[in-house]
Length: 274
Image 1 (spheres, rainbow, N blue to C red):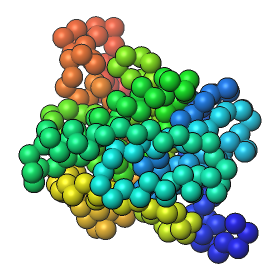
Image 2: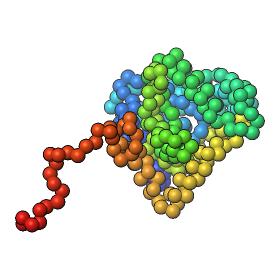
Image 3: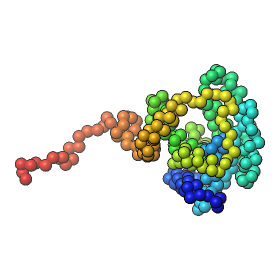
Image 4: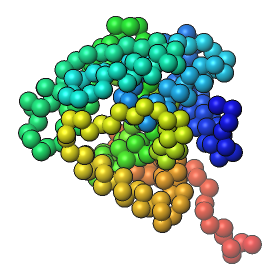
């Protein structure tokens, strides 16, 4: 787009730069890769595809991009939206049809949130499809805020210090998941999606309740950011600056073997001999 305003141009450059840094820092994409870009029809995945198509043009390596959407057979799903968009920009794509909607409705009681089971079923199907098409990387649209929210969810409700890693090897070792937007803020992605007028498909077709725990954490982080601008960025940097000896995980650090080092130099000077 040659008619971007100054702020729009800065926004586009910032997203491209941050995604490029994440890809480089974690070696997400290598020469000859076939990257399966998982599209949900939301702002995050549209932005991810847009940025990856740009990186594909300027990167010093060659890699393929194939877009994949999973049609979960939710009533009223506008199944023509994504194919029409992907055809218009000339991107190879597949639509994977799997009726996980019926499974979720059968297993989850009415009124309970369906997001967790829905996500697991979708992820398993996409893992399998990545194998079928020979994709070497699976790109997901999670951003910095998603990663931080997951960290606090696991800490508050799961009793673990873990988040979403920018790069992940699946449990069976057959898929590598990458998150190219790991350094990008949700606010930037939302602004970019609006600027580009992506044909957004809302994730409310199943009628499930919003994930209330995640919403609480999201609002908590937003409030912290309002009171202390820059705090979210600082907290995200903390995920990249872990000091196991200052925590309490005995599997990460050998606390039992800690002993006084008799060879260490005395900390205090002998002032009487000065």
